[in-house]
Amino acid sequence: MKIDLNNYRVTGGRRVRLDKWATRLKPLYKSEKHYKELLAGDVAELTALQRLLYASDSYSILLIFQAMDAAGKDGAIAHVLSGVNPQGVDVFSFKHPSGDELQHDFLWRTTRCLPARGRIGVFNRSYYEEVLIVRVHPDLLQGEGIPSELTGEKIIWEGRYRSVVDLEKHLYRNGTRVIKFFLHLSKEEQRKRFLERINTPDKNWKFSQADLAERKFWNQYMRAYEDCLSATSTKNAPWHVVPADDKYNARLIISRVVIETLEGLKMSYPKMTGARRRELKAIRKQLEK
Image (cartoon, rainbow, N blue to C red; front, side, top):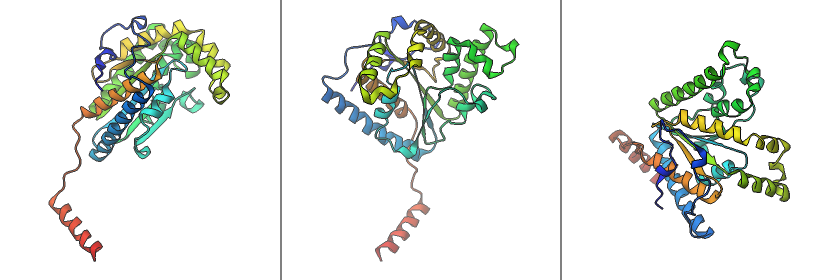
């Protein structure tokens, strides 16, 4: 399956206008059966690459998912990584910070969860919440105990963008590849999915009054995302704006981005040394007796 991933990648230094980015595109699949076949092929390819990542033990991968509620983050993570060995993947979901986490800088709780070499880490929401939800609800800053002289409108957000970019540059220099996805959902599609959650008993648990309350801040969130994507999409850690009104399309795009990134790494299985070959021959003789 050929997908031009440049269509979804935010070029560093480019001002993002989300109303110019589509939330729905022509399907990349011909039918639901075709979609399942395409995704199964991607999952198989990703599974093989994950084994190579683990065996080479040089790089690590960090997948970051950000989106409005009901955009499909959980489903994308579950389906795209469905064939990967669970022992090689760590998934973290970051919600409201705990009291202990609020006693530290805003990157502390997520940096503790960064993937080790050979592993894939997944952040379902991330440190980017600190320039998204906190920006839409600036009263949350009061709970972070930041000195008042550092909480000015320009100082706080520009400072946090710089901290994030510096962190991701540091990670890149140490072998961690950061792949960032913004699942771009339309307000109308969110409304439909909220209604589906209410009308489907098995999905009732997914919806709360808080979700509806946050929907009222839609325009503020869009501006916060535009500023965030514009300020933090870099050559080595670019944002991908994934049209999310069609969940199948979104999953196929995400899987190809991850595969392309892994294929671009210089990875190989450990080479067999003479000493190791002799050791295995000796072991085989013992087993054959």
